[in-house]
Image (cartoon, rainbow, N blue to C red; front, side, top):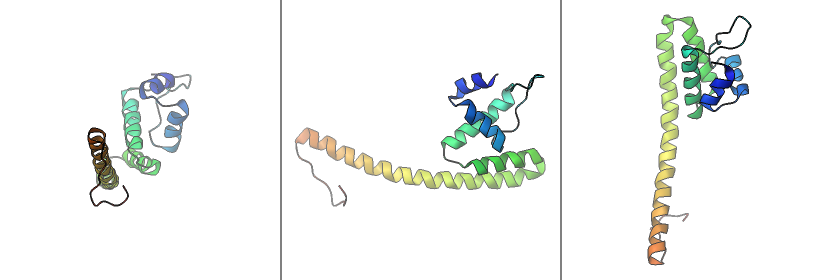
Length: 129
């Protein structure tokens, strides 16, 4: 696939895709004899991973470190696993924050929906309403 096709599929810009390759978030992409990027299935897998993890908030540095370790070979299995465990902990902590915020939103929405039905807004003993 060409860079344009990849960008259309993954809804990213060519600049982002080139940046990911330049900083090591994805390994070097296969190229044609003329030097044009030619993304194969393996390249697309790396792109999909990068986009997924970046969308989740993982850092460029973490992703580049993972790719670096991958390139070093099978002796880095443990290091890669440790890196991914750390990323999982970051995501779980972030998810916890979102869960708390969602719970508060659900509470407030329920109170306002009740107010729409009854004409009266009443809060429990929660500050900041």
